[in-house]
Image (cartoon, rainbow, N blue to C red):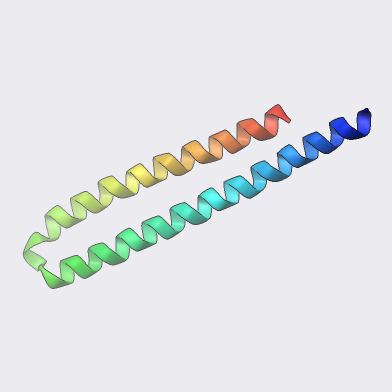
Length: 81
């Protein structure tokens, strides 16, 4: 009985750790891709640099919010276990 409870807790903590790591990797890849694409767009059309930069910052902020939500969910899962 006690062993199964400890096993469930350890699996929840391990799953939460893996999940938060995947969230961080996904957010890093997303922001890197946005930054690269924005730099390429600004290099091709320098006159639209202001609009591209504004859109890039808004999308990067949305990605960060989604990543933060994912980490909070993983934290709650680890506490629930």
